[in-house]
Length: 66
Image 1 (cartoon, helix red, strand yellow):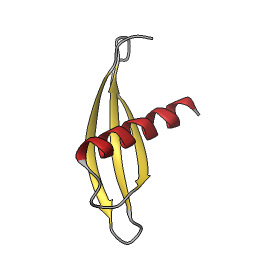
Image 2 (image 1 turned 90 degrees about the vertical axis):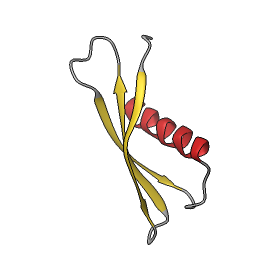
Image 3 (image 1 turned 135 degrees about the vertical axis):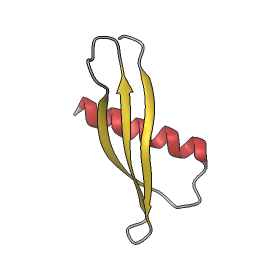
Image 4 (image 1 turned 90 degrees about the horizontal axis):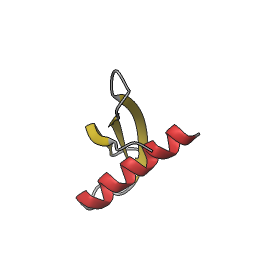
């Protein structure tokens, strides 16, 4: 697989539903535009930054592979 770069375009915390909503962009050679995937991650608002980023990227990867 080619080397890809990722960027989390935006993150919103929905306190009523207790989950994060985000858009994750994947940049890869050969793609004319970044691939943007919308994800939802159930988590507490107090989750650490690294855990949040890892969870969002893994959720986006799972959606790509579906």
